[in-house]
Image 1 (cartoon, helix red, strand yellow):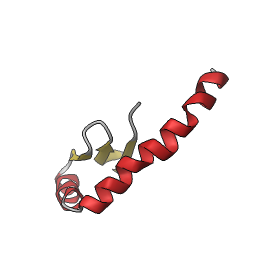
Image 2: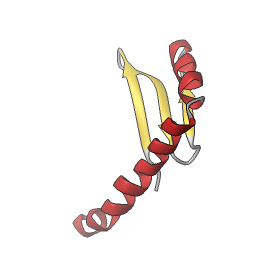
Image 3: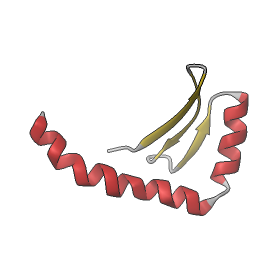
Image 4: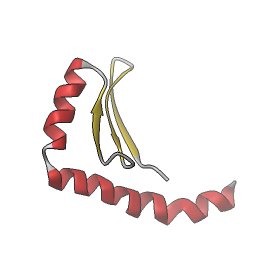
Amino acid sequence: IEYIQSYYFNKVEDVRFSSSLGKFVGFTEPGLMYAKAWNSDTSYLAQLNAQKETYCHNNIGIDYQAA
């Protein structure tokens, strides 16, 4: 299970957080700057990594039953 949070501008993905990597990855020039700034904030990264536990793991049973 992977938690992904993406940010888009003008239908182009600028930056993405991936729980499997545990950090942000930038795809455009502004996205690289955002990723660098956000990756330096360890408390924000810990918060997003915790989202995998609170959102994904709590809902996996429900999703499998619905499928």
